[in-house]
Amino acid sequence: MHIQLATQYPENHALAVLIGDGDALSAGAEKLNTISSGYILGSLKKLGFKSAKGKVQILSALPDQPYTALAVLAAGDLPGLKAADVESVAGSLYHATKSAGFADLAIDMGGFPAEQVAHAMFALTLASYRFDKYFGAAKLEKAPTLKSVTLICDDVAAVEAAFGPLKAIADGVIVARDLVSEPANVLYPQSYADRIKGFEALGLKVEVLGEDEMTKLGMFSLLGVGLGSRKESKLVVMQWLGADDKSAQPVAFVGKGVTFDTGGISIKPAEGMEDMKWDMGGSATVVGTMIALAGRKAKVNAIGVVGLVENMPDGNAQRPGDVVTAMSGTTIEVINTDAEGRLVLADALWYTQDRFKPQFMIDLATLTGAMIIALGMDYAGVFSNNDDLAEKISEASKSVSENTWRMPLPTQYEKQIDSKIADIRNIGGRPGGSITAALFLQRFVNNVPWAHLDIAPTAWTNEQRLPTVPEGATGWGVRTLDALVKAHYEV
Image 1 (cartoon, rainbow, N blue to C red):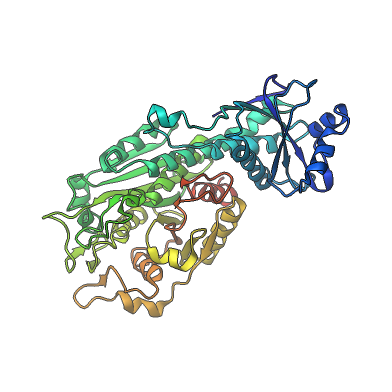
Image 2 (cartoon, rainbow, N blue to C red):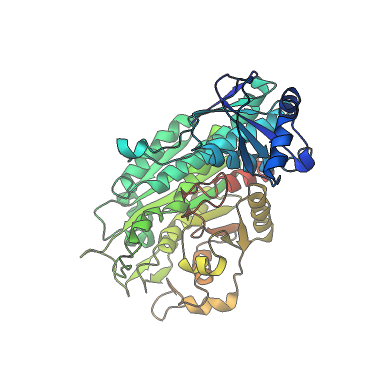
């Protein structure tokens, strides 16, 4: 969908105006209501319209007006409107009008600050996302009728300036959604690494380590996961050096990139296995975050590391009972080959802290079904060895309407991952499954402030839960991590 700015109303468009609580009218709505002799408020009263935030009422066009239809959007408390409110109502407007039969919509935001108009553009960009790359002509014809939105504002240049950083964040979210949506025959470790390489055009420095390089580094925990696949495993390192001091201590993000997860020899049931194309959701968030930081020229040095593997059953595949040695020297008894994401992250985390000595490390992974059982589908779990970092993540996630919930890391659960023949085992049984997975990861972190975000509940949604997040891949976490960096780590 095309989104643009204008200072004047474009003719032959449907028109949307905003109203607030208690029949308060925006400047555009007030003007239109006056010249139409009270048509807006009178029509809403006749229809019994309740001004609940995000609710939309479509009215007929008056014969002496240049618009083709009129949509009234309830925005809540107009004087107290925050960025999150603007995003919510703009996204709601898109979903209410996308298939209403008109192709072009203008939203009158005259009188609104440039920052609020920019957030409306941002919301419309995210809300209108569709992954239709593989649709044929017949299915494309069923696309939403709404093709363009024009935001009427007071100062186009001011809105464009405010939208610049938001566009970079939107680009990161959309790339993350695209990556998660791709089928595994298209997105596998090599093709994924190639895509990431393409983002060097933004100023990222990208390195791709293959199996030979990882073998020399002793990354046998990660490499073991990919033994059953014909696709070579990769470790991709992204660097954004945006601080004035290019040698300043960076922040670091690490992502699980299992491009398809059959479970390996501990194979999953057939039903629902197609969803395992998005078992690389954590890595997609890391890639999207690095794109956002580079796109808005964030004043920070940031590292993104993603371990890319395919977990397949094969005559060469890792077996339950095998023992592998991680880069750290820790030996791991593989009890279940379907607990593979933590094996990938073990080496990626160690490599990141060993090479880059970051201020903090945050890893993201669609790690455990147990996280969904614990928190449902609206919250990501946060595990951390550092209270300050955990609190900052919580604040950042709330600021962008991405829900997180901190989970415990009790030392008494460590015994569940003790092995009788190695240093550690890769699962600790059903009780506290997401906790023992996090405790496993913590073994590969020294004194670096660290957080593990289990995004199994939030990386994909089968129903629209937020106005700016359609069904499918969500790009969850890009906005949280960007907000975290912006609030606390840019210099």
